[in-house]
Image (cartoon, rainbow, N blue to C red; front, top):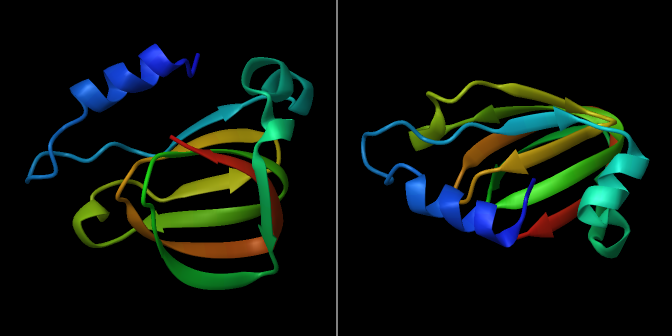
Length: 116
């Protein structure tokens, strides 16, 4: 599903960063085994943090698989028209390049991540 060709098509068809709508955060539920089989998540970086709230800006499209925890990601600024998204253990999530947001971590989080 997230092949290089698919990612190129997403970049090609993504709306420009003008007044047009921005791409949303996408979440797909899947088992750790499925995420490993499809995306080789064990080869990705690992990141985690305790319960906290902070601003973030994505410099690149991030695909992440949440191993544990829960966070509410609320787009801000030019991305404020995008919907807030709850991300939790068992989610494969894609955060769009350039998105600004607030991360409100409600349960300590640990994830594998990969930038494209």
